[in-house]
Length: 211
Image (cartoon, rainbow, N blue to C red; front, side, top):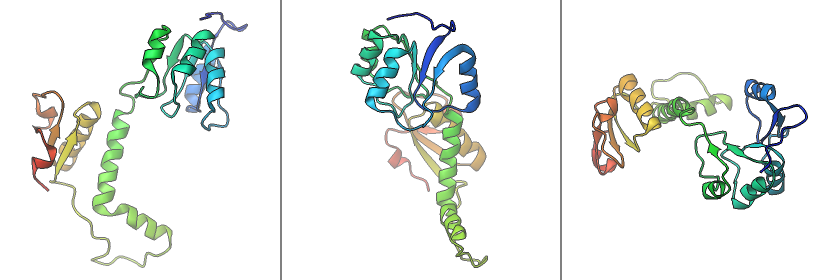
């Protein structure tokens, strides 16, 4: 792999999808940046060319980075794959290791956002918010009436969580302390503190009972 810097003295980075404006500006201060201005999934040939012609490749979770793309990067300039996202299952890690190309990711960055969205979806389901929003946009709302779109309370119910990692704990915290929910969970390894919410660890969440 080549470590040759560009004429600007900066390393080059290949960004497969658009990032927030502030992040792209920060990249520009430190690297020669190639952006995907169209912000649409790149073709396989474009990925191969980008990996081969840049010092750093910054794909996202929607890019399938297989052994051939990694090999093209190794034969060219690529010396780092910096993934924009938490998961790396879309990258052939064995191929990257074989070519001595490190792969980085962003663990924890989406924990709170994912937990917030989880609670949003549960509330929308229980309170039929999606139905109400669609009715309002369609101009079909005729005014309040006692029995219209009556939902169900989320508070006090039992929530089952499969996998008590960072996101599972964040959801459990919001559900228990924000809505008074009881938490039962299943996890591959024992968790002694009840996930910090007095949760009960089960071998089968479906058998946890509750409403």
